Length: 465
Ligand code: GLU
Image (tube, rainbow, N blue to C red):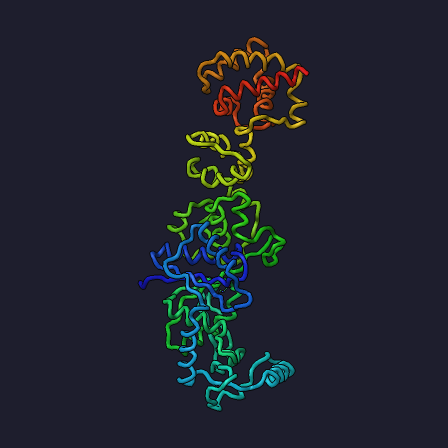
């Protein structure tokens, strides 16, 4: 089998949105699965709407997701000469022609076609005139007038279009610039693309593109049109449905592997398995398992999957992702494995990295502020004695490790006749300011003697007041 060559050709008119990223992923996974090649092409011929910021944002998002490319990035804006050659080639071969019909005339023929109950089409006035190349003439493609065109779509099955629906579309404007469908085909041919997976919003372009392949004497690529991603209300995904930019999820504390996993599952399945590491996706990806119906974007599901990925990732690997969130909060864990121990206490209970950084605050704080409700409920006079006793015993304790800590708590329980909860909850509030935290022995061990004793002393003083 020939090497599979896929591509991702974003138009740089904004950030990389989740729908675009999903298309990129399908093409990338397919190339990686088949040990093929993946090409990145920036479709920036719309000079007004294309921006450098968008190009950079797209690169950044792809990099964050871990999508790499073997070829490119190509920029269409740098390939105008090549497009010009192909336009001349088609015109010389009589497969395209110069047209000098004025915009007013074209407008009138479109209106007439619609009045007659048809589609707004060019009526072919210049098709057989053999006009020479002149200043201001457009170039039109000589499209087949009869018959039909079938897209052999690997996702949707065959889709048939009547050629009579199409007209002789413009491939070069009056200023000489090539049009969208034309440059896509020239690029896909010259870049050796043989597999095109894209959103089905492009399906209506495909018959035109197929005709161009035929006219240029090139073999057709394999096409697959993926249903759009929809919001929960089944309308096309938009800002109303949550953040649409891939990197917005990075800012909110999502792991790239979780976002990647979610986006792929939003249109591709492998039984009912939800959780995949990227390597596993590469291994299992196939075009056959891309679904025919639209994926519904559900932020809650994405968050649940993010929690699963946080849980599954080794603390050491997770730390670089968490670090910016800690830094933003002003926390610096310093060298050593301190942070990995912290992560190990929080990774089973954090849905996002932001949540984890927030929850980690008490490990770093110099001074614990009590949540009002927590203090009112647990730092009461009744807790004074056990907390004081515990502090006393901890002062004498040599090794702060789970087992000896447990023994100390047990001794306090015995001496005071209180249950563990009656002691642990006030201690938890004293150490973290909150009523919920990782296990009490774990956190005492990590916070360390000096800070623990300081915090217990503060709680004792608080209760004495
Ligand atoms: N540039 C197009 C887009 O961003 C993609 C065109 C294609 O896949 O053929 O939607």
